[in-house]
Length: 324
Ligand SMILES: NC(=O)c1ccc[n+]([C@@H]2O[C@H](COP(=O)([O-])OP(=O)(O)OC[C@H]3O[C@@H](n4cnc5c(N)ncnc54)[C@H](OP(=O)(O)O)[C@@H]3O)[C@@H](O)[C@H]2O)c1
Image (cartoon, rainbow, N blue to C red; front, top):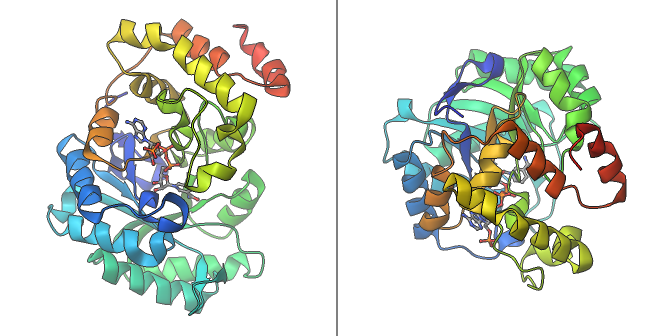
């Protein structure tokens, strides 16, 4: 893993690790101290990360605001910023999908203001909107680009068919899908498509919402959104935690933590240019930064995949790798 990659056809030069800011969404993660998050952003930057991901939806603008304060402390040309648009917020904090042109334009202005930048480097549609024609969305994004308000654009959480259709209308050069070594579904369609068409891929929940850090015994309970997540419950949670424990000697052999071993291995996939990770603290960020530039051997990569192939159906599919 090198320390800068060219992000698909966007041409943006970014670190293969992107610092995510969803952690500033109290609805999902509970309240997080703003100061600690800003210090974590600084630790990421000082450690070589130049790519920062946010969304207007994270904390209903809070994450963009906090990221904006951090951005004010670094040279603008040394960072690459992604944000996203999708939700229409009601005064009572409820929300609904809205990628209508007027709404995109209004939200883009609000994001620029909160981030304190003149241009958003990469603007992502957060989800697919069933009601707005792709032609209208794409025309709006092209207008924002022509006005210098965004540099390039892409989509998050689109299926490969939705993304292929979008590209018939505009220059969507990046995707942000969920992907981790516990959730490899997009390897079947979106990743090959992106590799063939030079689309930048920045995965999210790259460490499976913390589960692939190796810090769990499988007995923990959660007060945040993970209390409802099936991978953090019961037998499956215990099985994943046990699989992670079994990988500890391999991590030690590389002089890496389990977190670093998994992050380094995940980023070896040739379609995955960037992994977006979430950190709440400076310590977590420093651990992530420690994975920059690290790789594992081919046999160990497939041994990790085999170890994390937990559950019947997936085991059969992954057995084609010839490892387990
Ligand atoms: N486009 C989308 O729809 C979408 C959706 C989700 C996320 N994202 C983006 O992707 C980013 C990453 O996703 P994610 O938050 O799910 O990422 P993740 O990296 O898979 O998990 C983040 C969680 O892992 C734990 N963690 C972080 N570093 C650790 C370390 N060194 N050791 C142990 N635990 C550690 C922290 O939670 P604990 O300490 O509480 O365990 C943290 O909140 C987000 O911040 C956001 O920018 C985008």
